[in-house]
Length: 223
Image (spheres, rainbow, N blue to C red):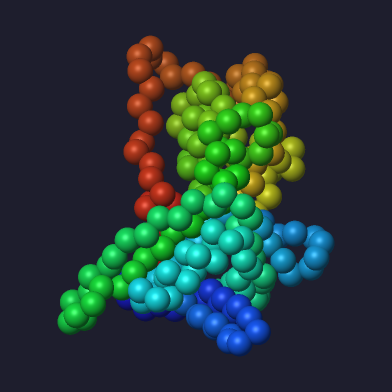
């Protein structure tokens, strides 16, 4: 965690009324989004994770519920206007630091699309929080119910690239990707892979043991 703050980004929220202007700037440790071509430098946010005080976090929570826009920036990402759209989910917690009387407040907001689309196969798109081959393959196998073994991860990632089915998403503190395709496409690739002997089944029969994967590991991979 040494110099972890150097990997953080910033979330800036400005709201003006007839009488006052509210301006809040918070440390942003995680962000996932997708760039929009129209208008330029605007993105659809899917996940934000910010740290701040009681009043600041309360203001951001209210802003998310109102579908207000934020300015997000960080390592490798220019200032970009972001909105999570309607029905975003908000989760709040506390972080107690040694030597600090009051705990920091932590807010995580997730877009409705990110919270629900990866639980269904109808959209033909899956947003994955990490570009790691095993994480991508395990996520797709789980979301679409595709049969396979962990050893096919690198091959499957290469197939995604060959078919231009994987696109980098915007990320701070992680390296998310957007996967496009239907279950039938993935099954066709696997069928070809087995027939061509590019991939193969285990020599022994029995249960397939997948390694334990978590978002903590996916986020840690970029630290």
